[in-house]
Image 1: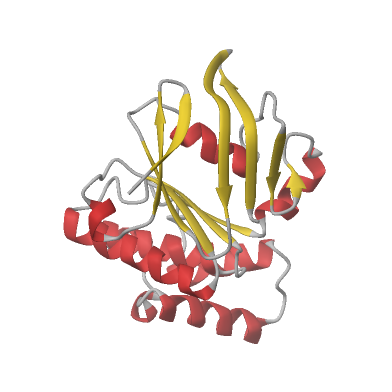
Image 2: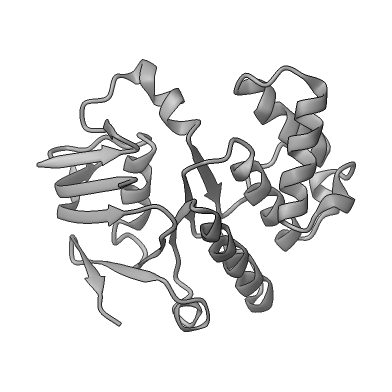
Length: 222
């Protein structure tokens, strides 16, 4: 079990965002979080990688860590087992695609140049972007930048990818291609949980669906 939440309550800015959350994520699953703006989707995702604290829980484990009790010094090790993707890509604009990816690998302990080169080529191949290695982020389209962000998330072979509105800034066709790419990644055993407002996407690329609504979270039955 990658994520196991039982009776989790989340506060933000002293207000209760979600109460009594039950949520589970297993290897290779593809999960959507849907709901209106402010319903708690991003807040829930942030608790998975300890950007936001949990107020109370019967159980709250992520990658076998109790995230409601985790020590700050242990959070970086948890995040190294995850890939995190944002709506605004968050690429470093002063360096090439290759150097963006190399920066992450070096920051997470990779030292050998050949191994770094091989891993970068591998993830760029996975997202169909081997030909942009020497380009700057501003030379890429939004869809291309998001593919690089996905490549970055894959670098350390994560057990789970957490994606917060990864298609929010993209046109419909590009958005569908990005979501299909994320779905394909689950075939390797990596789980994906993503928030989205793109409801038609749920029919095009099926997955497990949870809805945030009125301070609660519930699974939407197909």
